[in-house]
Structures are given as C-alpha cells and as structure tokens.
Image 1 (tube, rainbow, N blue to C red):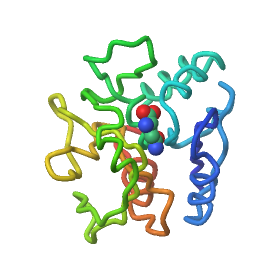
Image 2 (spheres, rainbow, N blue to C red):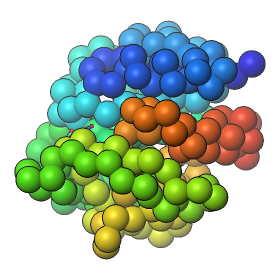
Image 3 (cartoon, rainbow, N blue to C red):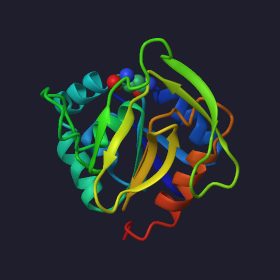
Length: 196
Ligand code: GLN
C-alpha cells in the first residue's frame, strides 16, 4: 500500500486527505520533518503561497522537502503549491520558491473579476475532460526546457510536469472528478521511474 502525505501547514489540507482516502490511498498529514518518513508521494495543497512558504521555513520543513524532491519521490503542487514549486525567476519578494519546476508564474493571474470559476479542462494524458475548479489561481507564463505542458485555459498554461513533479493551477480535490489525482497516483507515486 502506498502512502501519500499532504503538507499540513495552511490551506486545503482536509479536502486532499479526504480525496486520497476516497481513492483508497493511505493519506497522512505532514507537519514535521519526521512526517516525511515512509511517504511515497507528497501533495502541496492550495491556500496562500506566502503563508505556506513562511510556515515551511518556520517549521523547519524546507530541507526535508528538498531532500524528498532529490530522492525522486512524486510531488504534486496545486494552486499555491504550484507557485511554491516554481523557480519564478521574476518574483521580487523573499517568498519561498522551491524551484522544483523551471517556470515563471503569475499569481492571481485570472484577475479579480473572475477570482473563481469551474470549467471542463482538456488535460494531456487523461482521456476525458476534467472538471477543474480555479480559486484565485495562478497561471504559468512560461516553462523551461524539458517541462511538459499538460493543460491551458486560452493561452494561459495551467498544468505541467517535469520528472517527479506535477503542478496544476486548479484544485483537483474539490470536485468528485478525481481524474487528475488519479493521474498523479498512477504516474508519480505507483509507476514513477524516478522513485527508486
Ligand atoms: N492566490 C493564492 C496565492 O497566490 C493561491 C490560491 C489558491 O491556492 N487557491 O497563493
């Protein structure tokens, strides 16, 4: 049985834990460095990226998170988690950027008027369109070499993957359409070529 952790410092933690349980995966909350032990994959949830980044630093989780990435374990960053996983070369704050995927992001990129919306989304590698919920979502402005784009809304990239890291701008845990979570579990947790 595979065990997937959900980084539990701020944001949509409960929803991810519930979704994982529904999918028959052992799901655990990750608050301390030792909580990473024995995990086969990790979800960095949506929430507020500045707050999550600050808490990652304050709780002493950054080194363990980077080591987990270097071990090739599957990591899925959703929404604020996408921002945290990016290199985001142009960002000017001291906010944490883990740099797991070479990409530039635009925070709150869909604007104030359309802070939240839900739509069917074509997603590379998934046969049916997925029901995607966006909440003050970022988008990906550009990706570096080797990064595979998986989904876009108009000309805005909203999902990508590179090696052992998957990111989506939407919240895959908030509808009953768990296709993207299943995609993560199948490709990045069960069948990962990086997860030695
Ligand atoms: N707007 C948030 C941020 O910039 C992300 C929103 C979300 O995770 N739903 O951190």
